[in-house]
Image (cartoon, rainbow, N blue to C red; front, side):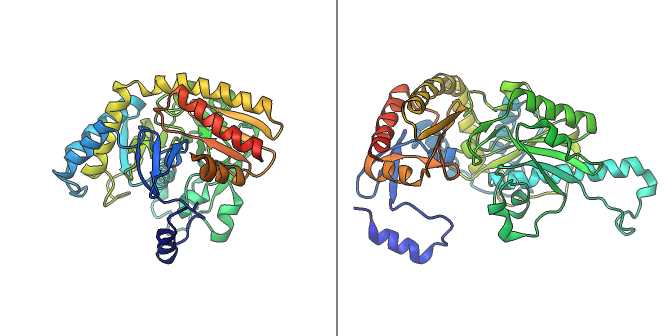
Length: 412
């Protein structure tokens, strides 16, 4: 039985942002979760791709505890050692030039959009020179337009929602940020058709997550990079879900050899503490000046100590290499399910971000897997099960997951 009293308390006090499953989780270890009733679960959702190192990793936990005893917050009016260390390591693994730590992936997107708009603003002033003095007062249109992708997901704030390519999410909150045009993912001609003299940036996920687990094709990503270079636009790659080793590379774009001007990262960066970041290089790294952007909590010593530990552990344990190996095994096993069951329509993905598309809604499958098989799965849209487990899973965990999922498929 679920912890009905606690669930009832939650329904009375918490704003209903999600339709939650009737399970109250209490603690975890590795890739295993336990609810308040003592039931044990195999986790293949990782808190929506957050818990890359799994639960209660000793080295990680000790680093966070040690920082708790020293300093948790001081504000960005001063320097702090953990943010410097984490920043250095993040720039090293990404090859970017500057980093700004945020509290979430959504806030990282907001910062990336501001870089793009400021870059466009600076460019207009440079082009027009003294003739642009008082442009705002003269009502000269300084709007920088952004091209985003259909079926994308970038967050729930007004700015992030404006570039999220799903009308279902956007419509109740219109009017949103002006000057956003949508193109089709992996369709270069559709991107070309949206470019105008006002375009300042193209934003996209390297691997679309919420939209159905669609990796960018090499031809498309390289083509978009070329368009940005040709038209002096910024390429913003959202690696919030697909980054931090999940694709088998530290960042998914590294597999393609296509470097963005701006990149966003979050989720597994903190392994459970609220942290995100936007990183910029070259011309994008100098677009904003002091006073253009800020944050009270972002980059505080506690969360950056967590990120610093995560980055250390990823390097020492060769997490990305492990993901390549186990991800290939997961791909093989999910292909087997696709070939075996007609209800499985398609299979996509790479590393430990993969999806099975069904011919029926997956909500009942996910629910039965959780409640009857004690298997934690999450969806991506109505018909796709998304596999984003902790990056530390082994092949034996893949076998157990497939066994439990197949039991549900057979029953249904």
